[in-house]
Image 1 (cartoon, rainbow, N blue to C red):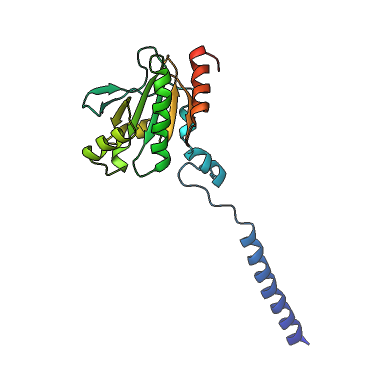
Image 2: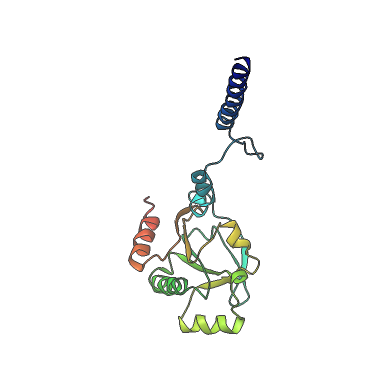
Length: 198
């Protein structure tokens, strides 16, 4: 009888230890982020890296780049006129189409608005000769600047092409487009910008 009770007690102890171990494992606190002591959810991370829209409403970074004629041209606030600024690469057909659309709008508004194309040279292998041939082919009349060190691309948080910014006459970024902006939409946005309406 004694042996049977001892066996039962030992079995219960082993069962209790086993169940207790499982229970403790289930209520372990979540591991904290060693960087700042708080957990970042995937949704928060995704929001953080979507940077192009974050500079909307702020002053456009002022930088100096060389145009297709080797002249230094300033980005940002320019001569109290609004600016259309497009980042592009040769291997993206949509970006080339954006340059063509800008050329059409430039022909209509060149006295009221400045137009600039920024070639993301650090992400393209276009030679100077190929650049000249491309600009001749699309009949580009406005300044195309070369961003060889990706300085402007980083300053404007550009991660896709084309990316187009509208900058008002005070130098503030009023709109950011990370896909093609059609001619009529661009004209409407610039009309509002010239009238000073939001």
